[in-house]
Image (tube, rainbow, N blue to C red; front, side, top):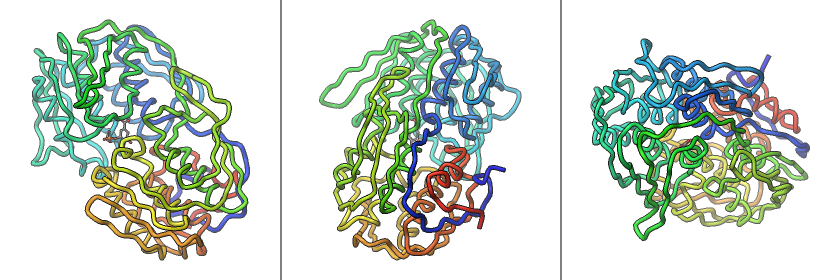
Length: 445
Ligand code: S3P
């Protein structure tokens, strides 16, 4: 039985962590690989696909849209693309589970297809803001039927007559950028997104990989990404790099458990994803990249860490898009560091799978760590000694909160308990087995 599907979980203090482990495929790249494979002409083989629930929900939504998708072997999938414009009106409601990426990207894709589809998700996804995508997609001609605040469940009435737009992102969001670019594929002419702060560029990379024309220019108002509409997308095999966001959990665990040495292999190092590693280096972490190489168009490396003392640092707001999913685990690292860590500009954390700013503040406080939330800034006071721990955390459908506090339990003075480990399956199947394999002590509570 896979322990990671059991809930609740308890994580106790571990001895030095050791080992060399691989991690599951990148979640962002996996969603996009399935989506682009679906609208290309021909069969795309995806190797290293993340088989987490979020990605499986995207696969099943694409099947409902008429795309044959097969699993040939572990992490190896075939997508028999139907070509741009070849999607069919889905009979079933598209249920994206916990996944904001799946929901927002697919809403963009179907917005410029002339049919109606219905979207829903779990309790967490149904609370998350969708106006950030419905607003630009409405400008492109789609219509939406939604409750006040544009939350799921909602209906997308795709347009037969899409308009290309130029859109300046009001929030730094790769999901919103990607939704617009996907919708732009169905429109004639050029669709442009201007992002004041660069966000992860996997959509741009993948558009090129499948043969679309993408232009990226840097200006004083930000980065402009332009896609040419109605391209012929051609099936093209790809390999998914290991997810740097997932890698951050065992890596931080090894940094805070004294005497540890750990290698995580094949981690994606797209520069728009590496903000946490830069921050850990600034905190004095013993972290090295080895065997740097390029796989599937993305830079990857093996990351080697050794446990040791970390010091507090200040993380500027501009870095947030490059490490937006890593603040929960950085909060744990900061709790073990010597001195104050200040993380600025965290407003987007309030609208993730849970309100992560509140979850971190309450959770760390319950572990005996001194914290402060000052507007959108988060301050953690580390003493250099392990925090008390011993808290029971309600994870609120949030996989990263769950994993972060299990890492806390591995090095805190008293064991931690989380109320639901099942949510970890969304992004990191096998998490518990992997952590226990390197020396963790996580078990059903
Ligand atoms: C993602 C973008 C980020 C991130 C999410 C995955 C993506 O969200 O938090 O986990 O794959 O595009 P935003 O773009 O909304 O910040």
